[in-house]
Amino acid sequence: MRLTTKGRYAVTAMLDLAIHDRGEPTALADIAERQGLSLSYLEQLFAQLRRARLIKSVRGPGGGYQLARPASEINVAEVVVAVDEEVDVTRCGGKGDCQDGHKCLAHDLWMGLSQQIHSFLSGIHLSELITNPDLLDVSMKQDAVLSANRERDQAINLRGARVRHK
Image 1: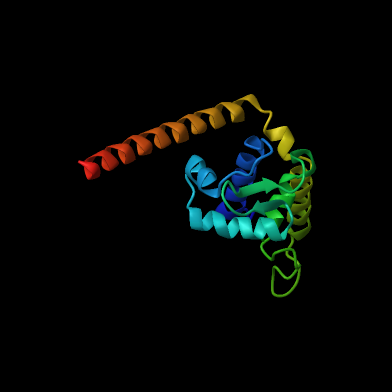
Image 2 (image 1 turned 90 degrees about the vertical axis):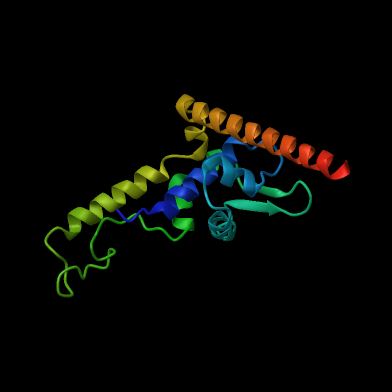
């Protein structure tokens, strides 16, 4: 299956966005920090997700990203396809030219598996995943780390400001 880190990161970021959907935009930097992803890489993925109309951006102070539709209306396959990933286990990319320009013996088997995987991912919506207790536990731990990092950064900034004013 050709599901690379690009597809996995896109799904992870969309889950983060869905979990933190409280009617206000979520900053991309927060998602990057919680998930341990590069901000610049996430920006590239979000540009693709925005073009696919899975998310919308809000500019200005307090801006960020929001789901363009309810989490119950966004399935995992849509997210994967939006970032140009293929759910395909064939050697030929589904073209049927696996062996000297013709189908290989196992082509139909692998095509069937690819279709089953796509069907499986199409049947899973973000809303189903974000109600999983294990996922919510991981998310709460990530939020706690983000909060602790912010408090530490604020304390460092306050100390630096005091030193400069003396």
